[in-house]
Image (cartoon, rainbow, N blue to C red; front, side, top):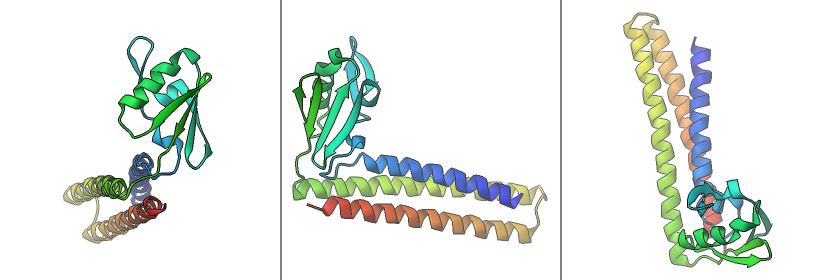
Length: 186
């Protein structure tokens, strides 16, 4: 039972880690990545909200440029307009049926803002990890109260839960350090 619960706990925490990783990828670093734009909401086809990734392919020809190729060329102007209105600091330029987005260098002030944003996203990830831990600890207490596990089993499993939690928090800290280094690169 402990192995099954441990596997489920790890799976739940890894989901949180993946969510946080994806969330951090949306923080601009001055380097082009598809994650900067693929979740932008575009008003297309008469006001219907769609994600950019649903309307186009996004590629990265170099470290300072995103290239957007709409599946339907008629949505190009909608995409450009929505990117400009999203106030992301990205400036799209039409090139034939495609769109080129140059990633401007970050000012020191903007870097500091993005570092704060990244820290907030990391803290949200830690809160989610702690919530998973809290739910697992409550489950252990219920099992103990129902006398389905012994006190030794309870203490042993609580220790395992804490070790897994510490491991996941350390992984989040590592992600934060990497993002911080990425943000400080010029």
